[in-house]
Length: 154
Image 1 (cartoon, one colour):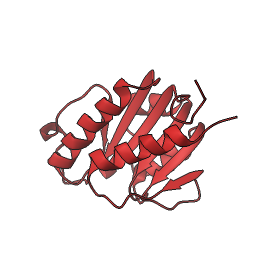
Image 2 (cartoon, helix red, strand yellow):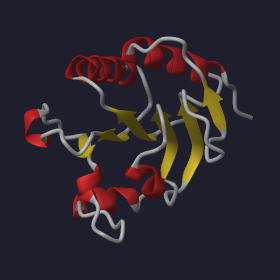
Image 3 (cartoon, rainbow, N blue to C red):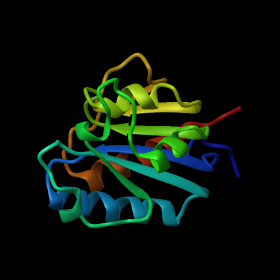
């Protein structure tokens, strides 16, 4: 089997910007499907939410950390000790979906990644920039996974 960017990813950090419950549910289902046929052993999902959204109203999931601007203290330090611990670990791949104007972006820039992929975002942090014309999470994730399967590694 040839080594591709997708099949060599064992640890994955995915960041998704929440804008509706329907899109979040679509994203979760699509990600579950993509991961079921992958080599990924460790995954953390950070869902950026607006400060006026009640985290308790969102569906709980043991892999998802809902991240709000209120999760940072006055000096910009993350209050969630468990998420901070996850951010200390290196990951094979970062998959950031959407705009980077989020408080979590400064935290994520400190993490070591072998591959940093931005989807519909254009920051110099990313090694690879992918643009999807779709706004549907399922279509975006499918596009990303299929693209990463085509990128052969030496």
